[in-house]
Image 1: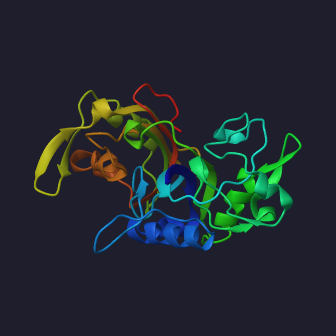
Image 2: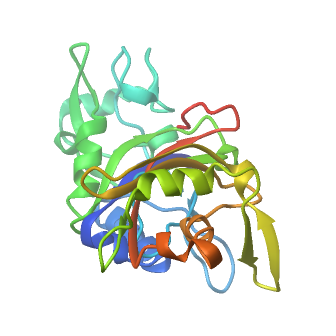
Length: 280
């Protein structure tokens, strides 16, 4: 029986220059090396069921990335009562059920169910104490995967998803704008004036054409600061239409060229659903 699990992870530092395709390959290898049994598609060229919510542009960092992975299951491992992070409580944690054969401390079939898919290993690999009983340790599981990941990519949490990735509608971003010849005078005030306009028309490229898009309705809670560096913090819409950081900066073309940075670095801080509730 296969199960769906969700990984929340960060991608910062030098890792922000890893492309989306290379990220998928990196995560796949790390999961396999950590002992996770991935579920593959059928057919001539099988591939693992792995999906990232919002692929990052190269150069953009994030502390709130989400990846859904479908894993295969083997024999269950004992799980004690009580809650364990996002996996729930009682005598079951995210689909894990008690297996008396695991109590002996020898080798067992590891995990099954909601967070299953880890191949056989000693009970000590993932064991822990939950309300005094030997059981699943989320922290140990996360650490085992992180030990296989390169610097800059880190699993922050793992749990059974209760919501679909397509429910993500807004992303909060933070950016630093760099100017080779120094920031324009009163940069924050001028930027705020530009982005507070009721209509901000940009040319948005698609795979088939170029069209005009008014991004003003899809930007909210935007703030600027130029005390030390010129910074921007905003929430942008990412669900048809998707407002990317490039689209955001495209608003500084034409008559606002002096405000256009020579380089900008962005970091995703948080993701929200349509009701502006943090997504998990």
